[in-house]
Length: 286
Image 1 (cartoon, helix red, strand yellow):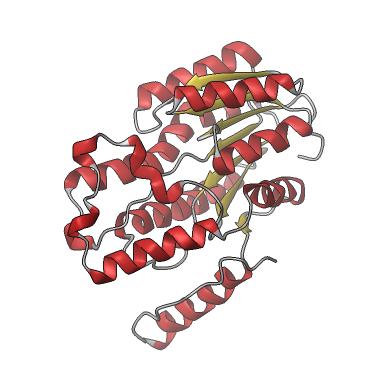
Image 2: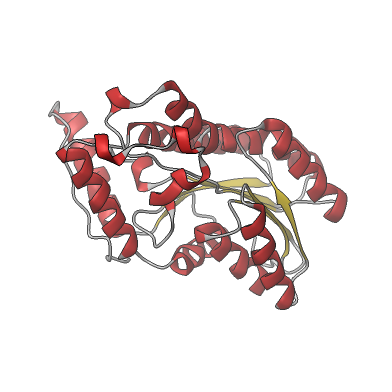
């Protein structure tokens, strides 16, 4: 898609961070917007900001881990605008714990938002988008952690690897049917967002107790906070997304070190080596 003016974009996790940046960029392109977020207050603020800039936008409070919520989001989008041309499955959460300390509730929460949230988006939107027969694109937000192994983030890494695999299969399924609907998977590394504070949206009794963290877990958690604080701006990610839309790129990588990390991982597999522990420069850009 090259001409985005008056096209319709649906963005989950659209109230802040990467989702908000994509929404702002979409508005500049003249797109009509449907924003979803679990935080109704933040969503209302973002919607008001976009309306103040002249955008045609609605906000729909949505828990993407609940299919009925996502179906209601789709119904709202198609009722208001009749078409959807850009679906951005972006809502995400993260949790820092070693794999053996994750509870069933932890797994359900992370997989529910990060992986099932994307699945729900595809179920609720894609059949209607295909039926309309119009040119469109699906952007699924994964992570560099969907291409590489991230110590301390078992649930997050599993969910994001799942999003990458799902996106690749979806690409093939649509291409084999010569669909006008295309797919991209977004794999950013460190970005200045509140992803490291994801547990703010959980009940108090479900949040991680930092006092129980061992030395390694505390070191990892601290490093992640520092990396996100010094990461790239969300607007840079939004620029990469819209470049991919125009150029029809599938993989959207925002940090060059991700590519070198993927190469090392592939060499580990092909050469039968144990996994290499990688480190990344949070400030590097392509």
